[in-house]
Length: 142
Image (cartoon, rainbow, N blue to C red; front, top):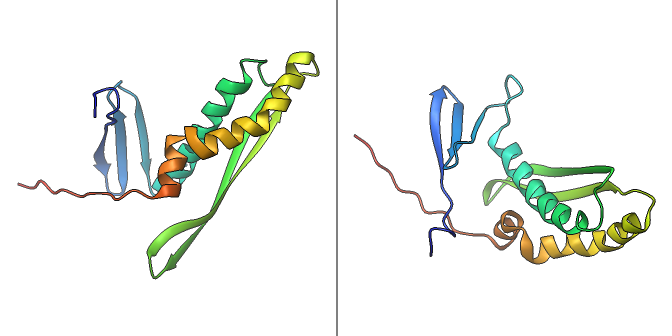
């Protein structure tokens, strides 16, 4: 594993059930319970799944033309079963409009393949969720 392949995020508690995520580039994102409009961890996961595929698809289609509208929604159901709390029935919906030009036609034509390619191979977040990856937990305490 090289440094280029490693990813790192630090989570710091701000107050009860409110945290700040920081990446190594200095980006910050506050999250917590569903209060004050804050994203919950589940919403962050859904945003990551949708955002990862959206970025892949945008790179592919924008080579032809910029979209007039590019909206991705993601829905899921939270359940509790013998596996514990989890999400099921995750669905991404792409609503993308391109200009009525030759370049727009080319982007429309490649859109379904771009979405499928991201889903099947490119999107690290989606691939990780679908294939399942064990999570190791370590504790440091003083």
